[in-house]
Figure 1: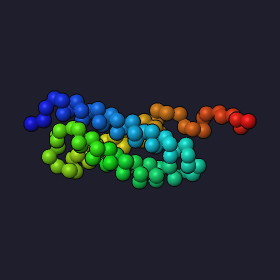
Figure 2: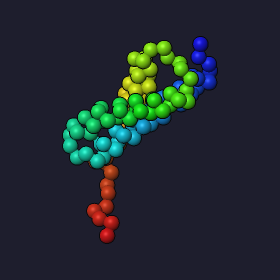
Figure 3: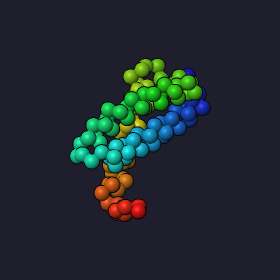
Figure 4: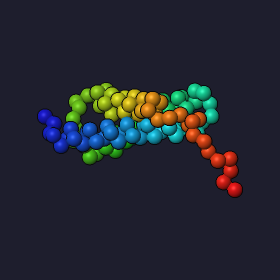
Length: 104
């Protein structure tokens, strides 16, 4: 049986993973000037980063899940979906910002 501390740490880890997924999606969205390239990079690279963070956070968080697919669904799938949704729906697109032509 998992403790309350384990569930609290799990909630913090999922929140951090969601933040990382949203920032990576935003980074790819700003840096790649293609129509679908940022989506492809977000769905290829972000899960790898989230799996790495899951392995690192697994050293701190006591085991809560008994199966690996459930662990990956909660620690990678949910934050990826939430982070991507936050970036696409709630943050204005990069095209809406006016930037100066040059810093010179």
